[in-house]
Image (cartoon, rainbow, N blue to C red; front, side, top):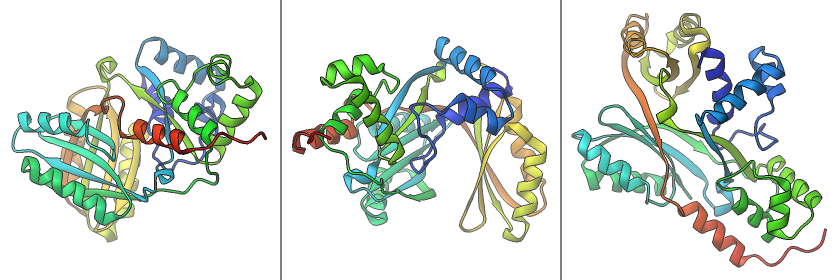
Length: 314
């Protein structure tokens, strides 16, 4: 993979729960091309190659968590006493309810995004996890879940269930399994996407990631120098800089990618040389920890289907 491949991949994989411009079952090649300055055919060919080679394992459908009365998602980092303990943590969170995402880093750290009806509820889950494994924890982000503009009925939930682990499933197969017309299937899927009820993202195979390294710098800065620091990072890393997120208290979360193991450490050392930087921490991505199936979202979808009345004819 080259830098363009990585940028294309990030456009279809790294989408948060508030991403609201994803109005098809995958981001369109033309939209990616416009953003990255590439022609549509180039994007289409490169995405197809990633799929064929197994780097993109599948496309996952995720219902808007606000439909389950969940209001917020907080992301915490947890540092274990040793790597063996961290492995137990990653195994445990695969079965824990209300875990939106868990990311395993090289070393003793894992980050866990937890959803809840309130910040207080999320913090209680984080505290329980920390106490269970004697982990050092700190928060790195908080996000309000945006309400969808439509309420799904029984058929909508059935479609979401069918798309859950094969979001690009063919219309003919879907309509057959649901006993509705292809036209109705297409209409319903588009409505779910347009209303913010459904999000689709690519799930990758970290074992196919040879020669590609994702990493994050957590940088504490003098807030009066923040703009200059972000500008310098953008100039230095150019297209290898995926995103910069500013947190309260003068903390920057800087996501980058590299093709050699030396680059993340060099970026860490160089970040400490920037005027206005107080401290920096390096986290090298290992894998996204997928929950065991069926997971808590799958069970909530089942409950919605069971509780919903049959849709009225439209």
